[in-house]
Length: 294
Image 1 (cartoon, helix red, strand yellow):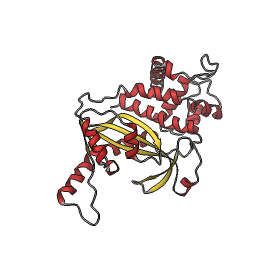
Image 2 (cartoon, one colour):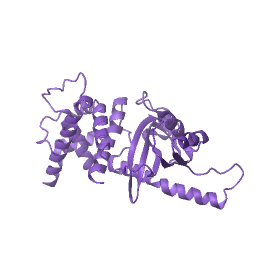
Image 3 (tube, helix red, strand yellow):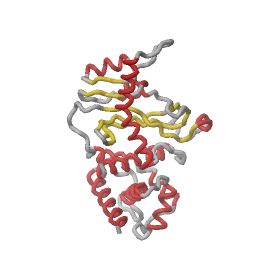
Image 4 (cartoon, rainbow, N blue to C red):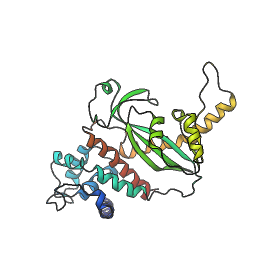
C-alpha cells in the first residue's frame, strides 16, 4: 500500500509540474498531444518511480514496471518504443528539474559560502575511452584527476550553497564536454554570484579569475599549490586542509547523486539525446529527493 500511495503521489506531482510548465515540457511536433498510448507524464513518473526503487537503467525500469506495475500502466509500450519515447524528453526533464530546483531549501542570505566542482559522467573509461564514438556531438575525451583515468563523456559542473550538517544545495548546474577544463568552463559560463566566499579545488586557482570575482564581491578560496622545488610552509598546509575540509561537502553531494541515481555511470547510453536525458532525468530525480526529503 505504501508503494501504491508513493506512485499515485508521484504521478500527481509530475502532472502538476507538467501543467505549470506545459509550454516548455511539450514535445514539439509530437504525436503525443492527444495520445492513444502512454503519455509523457506517465513516462516521467515511471522514470522517477523506478529510480526511487533502485532501478537506474532503462531496461531495468521497463522490466520493473512490466513485472510489478503493469496494471497501473496498461499502455506500457515495448522496450524499444519505451526507450525511444524517453529519449525525446530532454526538454521535459530540464523544465521539470528547473521547477523542482526553484523549491530547493536554499538560504536567501547571500553571504552563505558556496562550493564549486565538476562530476565526470562517463560513457567509456580507460582504454575504451580513446575509441568511443557515442554521443560525439556532446561528449569527448577527458581526464578525471580524482580517479586518475581518461574517460569519454561530459562534465557536470555544479555550484552549490553550503549547509551546516547537510548536503549542499545546488544553485547552478551546467554540462560541458569532458575535454573542457574546469577553469575554462567557469569563465565561459560566467555565473552570477552574490557577495560570498567560493571554495573550489586547485583547478580553479587563477589570478585573473580571483580578481574578476573580487570585483563582484566574491572571495575565491582554493588550495595553495606547492612551489616547484619547494615545500609549503606549515601555515599554508593548514590553510589547504581547511579549504579541502570546507569543499568536501560537494564531493558528498556527488557521491549522493551517484548513490541515488547512478548519474556518473552512463555506459549504456547510445546517443546524444539519451545522454542528455541521462543527465537531466537523473538530476530531476535528485532534486525531487532534495525537495521532499531535505
